[in-house]
Image (cartoon, rainbow, N blue to C red; front, side, top):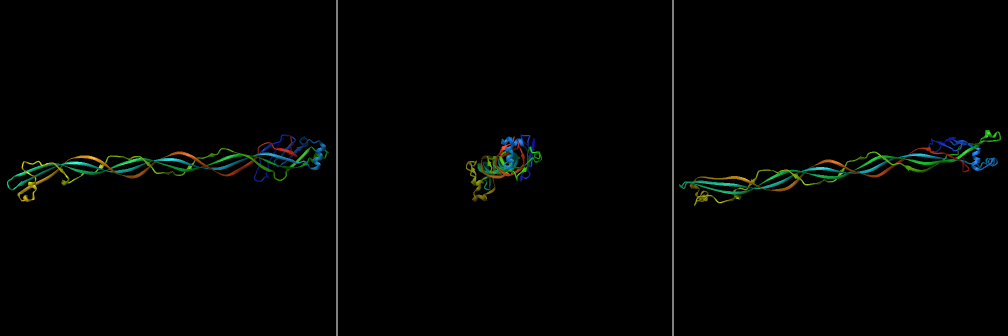
Length: 337
């Protein structure tokens, strides 16, 4: 036959499952109420009728029950983590530069005399140095390495085995005894509150959701070399006449350009022309100057590996305790069969 065990009186625990007893002469319900056949007791204790009657009269029979149970447990979890990341950035820059140059120049000097000497003409070529400044615009790329912290929620479940045990109150099958024969013992329920003993707990693997991350904290960029475009130059600035390296004058024999330029004969000159004509410019070497860093433009962040951190375990939530196997009823420590 089957029996039910449901212990509502046990504080904080409810029992709902059905358990069975091996013998058809032993029945018990969830409150500890049931029936034990006389023959089952005699077999367990090895008593004949007289010995059993003597034990009944001496009230030495003690009925107990042990019920296997299982209880579901659950626990919230929180797991910390960190994630590496890298970010590409670009930086604008400008570079100052100077460029040397040389320029050929020609000087033509003519003057007319009042003393009948006529017009004197002179010419010479020269070279002068110059310089111009410019700016080149460029950029460079770099990589910044950083990390961010995150966490994720999870849970795990477990099954905890246990047992419920206690003594059972009983009485004789009085109605049957009226005929000078009783068939067994009426179990009248648990004596007090049964004792619950927790056994081993087996936890399942944690189950986690997705990580929620904060913002990355990046380190400084590590930049490569700038790549510059061509310089944009201003106009050359050349030395004046005094800085020009002149060649020899082209003059007729016996004539001297000083004849046109001496102040003491200025009153004898009716007309003078002294023209310097710039010629071709020959570009020289460019000298790179200082680089001025400009604004940095942050690029995309590439997510790296996620490193799982410590798990924080929350409170354990206990579920219902249910019967998980066959209840064992004993008399005087002997299992009834």
